[in-house]
Amino acid sequence: MISEQTADTPIITVDVLGVHVACVGTPQILHQVTIWAHQHDLRTIFYVNAHCLNVAYTHARYQQVLNQADLVYPDGISVVWAGRLLGGCRMQKATGADWIAPFCALAVQQQWRLYVLAGKPGIARQACSRLMQQWPGLNIVGMCDGFFHEKTEQEVLDDIRRTHPHVLFVGMGIPRQEIWLASHRHHIKTPVCWAVGALFDYVAGVEPRVPTWMNQLALEWLWRLIVDPTGKWRRYLIGNPLFVARIWHQKQLSRRH
Image (cartoon, rainbow, N blue to C red):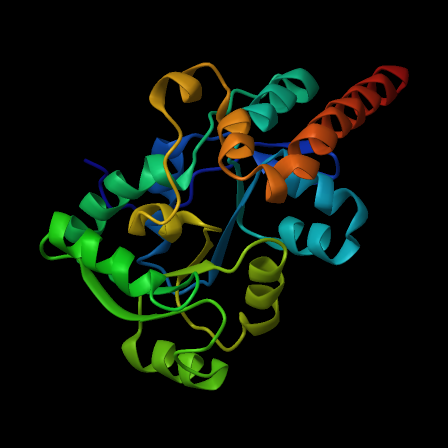
């Protein structure tokens, strides 16, 4: 059980391809959310994996937005390895599919109000229905798809303002979700805004979970490639070697200085 606190815990970060990634795992993330959800300050949480960092490497606005966030955590084992190589940073992979269960248990305990803005039409509703069945008492005060088909953008912003959620989940894919949050953060008075990518697609059962044995062997990327070879081949077959090369280059530069 995570007790409510009033002071922030210092977050140690390491520079991975120009992005300040926090040396945390799921327990530390949930601990931080528990603190922030009860404060008046506006906090933003993002994740990064190898693909995110490859995009940020050449996308200045995305990199800037990531570095303006209050917490950027590793959502991929390759980022964990990079963090350890570059800074001796003890971080742990924290994917949404792994932290959503303890988060929901915590949300019920803390009586948080949640708002979900994610996925294609119908995804958020299906996912939220599953979550509320599994965790009676989970208070989801609003939802909409991440493409504003079910409600207009202004209607969503008005809805968020009216329902006063403690946590707003945004799943639009990178870098759209991060840039959208950065552009609208001053209008959204929610204590914690959290970009979650395709999390609710997995919760809804639309996207299959990686088999446990492949996850344990750090082969999640291979599972994603098998499931969607047309959509993912460039990300993994080109992106993964490119990520490794860039990390190696950064390590060599750091040794020279």
